[in-house]
Image 1 (tube, one colour):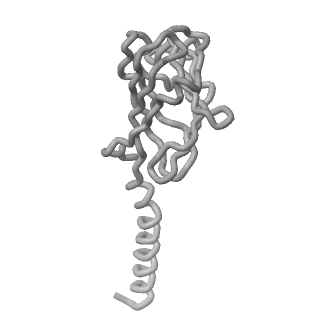
Image 2: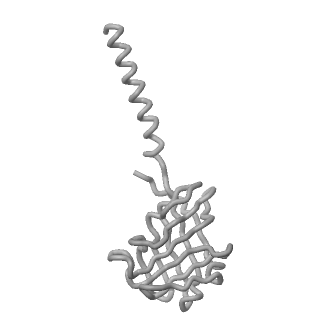
Image 3: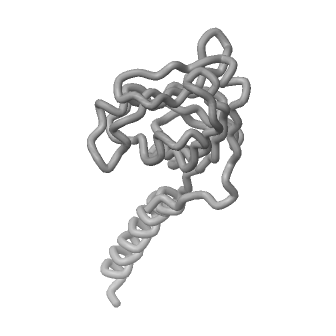
Length: 160
């Protein structure tokens, strides 16, 4: 191979390697999922559990999914990411540290939940949470926020 062609091949190979190195971290990135649980004190009682999916560690961003899995009162089960009014979550060191999430079911379209509303928020340092059997409103209370827990799931969701 002539030296000129050899140098050109090496340059192309180096550029391809650099491009792959830049893209590899993005392809291998993972998001975090959290289980949640709270006592729905301001909306008739009951214990609510679910999962928040698609959060990045050491960042603030929108969840890709907020799903209520169980509610001892029987309402509001399903996916809430449809048309959220607010969707901001902060994760630091693998823990949720701040959140502002509000969905009125009436603003969603199926298959997202359309007949219930949910709220996670922080007001004056107090955690607030509530799930209501109403498409147009929800009461979130600090008393319920005192029962709110987030638990990191051990299996992260791969980003493709």
